[in-house]
View 1 (tube, one colour):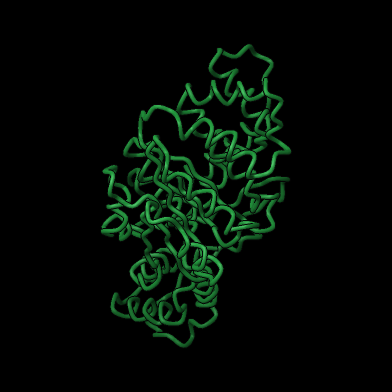
View 2 (tube, one colour):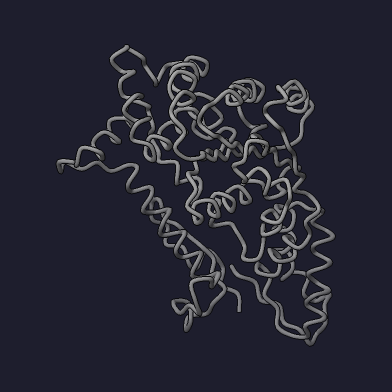
Length: 348
């Protein structure tokens, strides 16, 4: 049974529409917390709540720490909480995908807090190979393990989210939420007439990171996840700034995700050896593509026939998730080419 999207959308402003693999009888019934439908609903609700929190204000008196956090958010010109992009990409995750990265030796070395472990890890892949979803998966895994994780998603042409200044302000805000001593020192910079909203990236880096964070007494390791390196307005400037963390007293691990371009490769080659750069290619993990297509495509009939259709779509997608989505959506119109004993069901 196919339910067209137009039949399930009411057209209200800001309405959120998500597809579920269910009928009218079990659409609200979930097998367990790992049920893909449950995860989709949970993430959609989280995204809506995040948007409400980021745009609403309250007249109620705030406790001192919450007031300081609110003051810092205003000072740093943070108009949207960082969770919004994370929730958006996490909602695109398909169960059973991305697990491979947790078994990668280079990732495990980066995660290790010993002195000789890599400080900077670069995960690279072509366009639409699932980099942003992988970033959200890694963030979720770090948070679940109790690590102090800060992140930012560069998004070309989206409200200035390719700005290096916004990235630095957002990461600083997230660190301040975890480290009161860092928050106190950043708040003191206001007395020195530092305008965070208009400061250029170098000024922000020198004032917040080199003068404050890098010199703080080590408390815990910080893990920074930055997605969309190639979409930043100046990727080379970002990498050059990050090279300073090799002198940091505070242990900092940085994971970058982006496409492999000549300009990025060139600046990576010029990094100081103390950065311990390591790289991982995210391409060629076909099991992720199979799991993704398997969840997007619903078929009844012979299991072997279903597998053959999935394999055909995997080969045609050429490691591109956007292409795979387009091909899956085209399957219902190609159903006459397939076995008459199998019925194709696709989530509208």
